Image 1 (tube, rainbow, N blue to C red):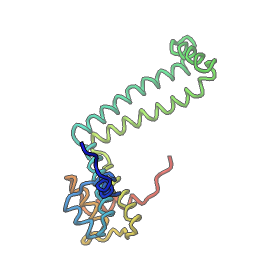
Image 2 (cartoon, helix red, strand yellow):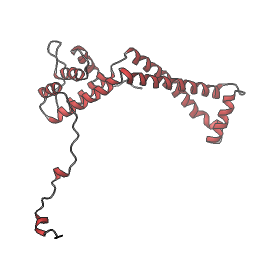
Image 3 (cartoon, rainbow, N blue to C red):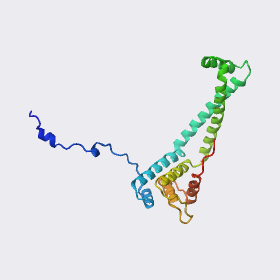
Image 4 (cartoon, helix red, strand yellow):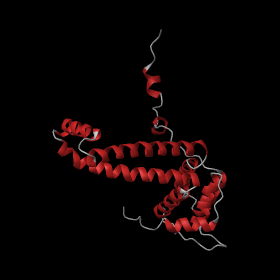
Length: 217
């Protein structure tokens, strides 16, 4: 078989940087939502940010409905059950009678971990406090989700939208009830794209709340 000529090898075009680069991952966006976004700022990066917010909204909203919500509530209830049982065990181990079996078991565990049960008591007290508070929180969150609770999807979208407007140097004005501002219109459109109707007044309120500093823990 004849060898390839050097001239043919020399004239073969080298792969360009565009050919070698992996295709960019595009976040899909509904036409109606894209239209609202481009009315506010006709820029691809802005539309891409809005598409990302809409995707996050759909994911968070799905946690509030159907099987996903039920599974999350079930997991929270399981955590509450085990956290409460372990907290009760630690309470008996730390404050129960000297003859309590939990106390004897704790002493053996503390000796194995720290060489002395006395050294094991401070971290176990901290664990007891955390388990008690976390168990109560899990129970409360499960109850809120069952009742509908706060709309985390809308809140998260509002916080992301505020950050997006700031990044693109856009004025985040709420507007009026008759003529909502751009951010309000866009937040309503994001919710609508996920199949949920959010009134401008509700969107305006959650956008206003998104600007408040988080409460200290």
